[in-house]
Length: 395
Image 1 (cartoon, rainbow, N blue to C red):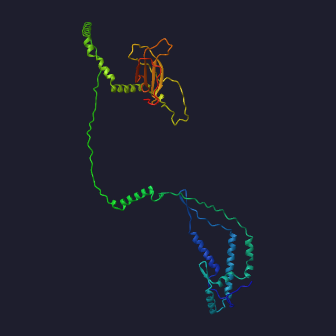
Image 2: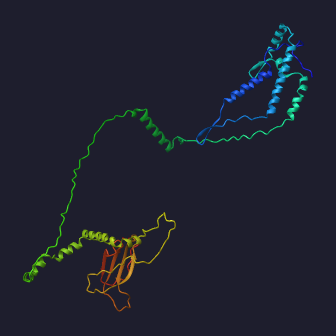
Image 3: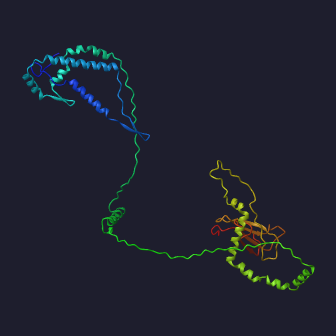
């Protein structure tokens, strides 16, 4: 196998480092530099080192490559000793001739002669045949599985503002320009100079006086007294002599009672008092009528129980204005559409064929807030046969 050289002269004596040793040093430096690097990742809120580890190759393969490199260095050293007879001048000329054609390999400046000397001749290939044979028949292990997990870190948006553009000349565009003018006037214009002054205010003092009422405790006691029959007889005789004086002292004229009954404020106050008193007795029936006892949300199963239990009775009052006080029949009923607490009941006769008839009729308006007494009573000179709330004006 022929090999060309740059000159017909003998090979120059090489005193610098060989290519293989320089390459090995560069590889070692790169490995040392790589060992100084670490890869960190955040796993469950903690920093974990996830630097990939080296693959452990077979020991025989390492020894094989180490032997090849040792043999190559020894062979190159023998070749350099055989060319040591060359003169110093020729060596300088050879070095100057190849200086221009030198190249940089892994940070080390080497000439072409040095690279060729490091490669070796064709005869060295036969000497390395046994090493190549052992390398081809060496046992190979599969590379270990390396799992790399890439996790996306959460993104926290601290502030986000959408920019909206509107066409100039439109109503929205004019509003934006007007708002910008006001903002510039208040920040960089004359509007930023604003006068300030301190002012004090005083509210009107309201005089309040606490009032406490205290009743006197009455003491009760039992005492014995002796009364003779003569004293009792004299007392009863004195009472029989002045009966009219006692009645006039404790009586009130009928005209005053009629005026009080016709007063609307007294009627309203009496209605409120009657409702309060009725709620003490009929509160359970009122709650059931308004369906206030509903199943709770915490109940596992909602049970709807329907029954025909008696809530309360609407007793017929004593109607005034007529001489016939016979009990009248209920001829019609109507519930108010606007207020479910109101019910109108018409009182008349049972039927046209009945023998018992009444000369007049009445209509009572009951409220479920006061089932004891009707709140309105209307009297008519004829028996009432029908009653109904107006669907347009129910009140």
